[in-house]
Image (cartoon, rainbow, N blue to C red; front, side, top):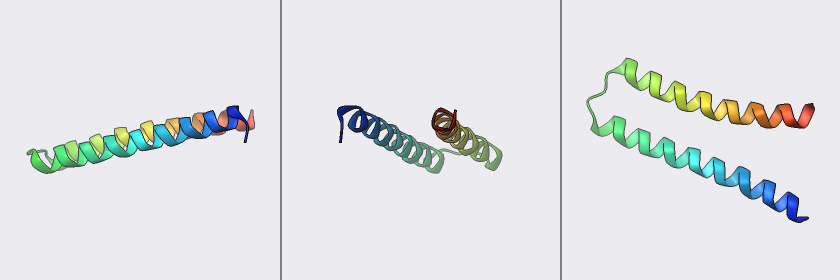
Length: 64
């Protein structure tokens, strides 16, 4: 494994871990707060779109 491969793998694992921690924090805040269903859906949608955008960016870089 070259340094560039290790660096890329570490970057993607770190970002994935960060999204996981953000998701856990959001889950806790939504659980303890008095948030309506629409608000919960919007918060999870925004988090999902952020993850999806990150994945799509990586796929675009691979294929183009």
